[in-house]
Image 1 (cartoon, one colour):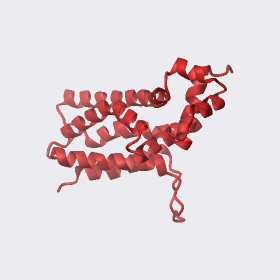
Image 2 (tube, rainbow, N blue to C red):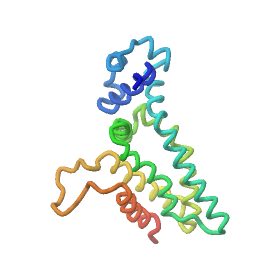
Image 3 (spheres, rainbow, N blue to C red):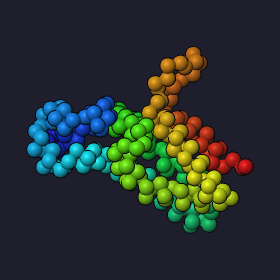
Image 4 (tube, one colour):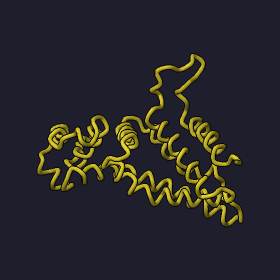
Length: 211
């Protein structure tokens, strides 16, 4: 198997170190040492440390968002053709399922998941600004789809319920399988399909509940 090229090695090293140490605590020298590259290569391929961070995030986030967007638009088109409201559960599924399936990809996705978890835990950082810039169009579309699904909800209620749902997803991505205390009869190593349905049971009920 051929070795990754210099740009790929820098991205892999940066993703690992940003996830483990955070953006500010990670030096370009540390990245280039890990990647077996030189500082000139970072400047050549990315231009700056911040641009490198954006490239790291976009590398996996953009393909993930394309999958989400494709599932969502297919759902909305099907509902429109049938003259029906899109299902709230299925709108949430289009957003959540591709995300949770990242966990099936093993070590390749672990650093990205950890990086996004760290990003969400540090909401005022550079990483969060980059993350939100690339997430905003999809989140707006999800909000629009949920508004179609739940026409009785005010925008205020819809915003907060979506916010709570995002918090649940963030918690799973950051904390799943890291609990220090688990009852003996509880299995936290669920198949991803089962985990998705548990998540949708909980969040759909929260989105749809009458006030």
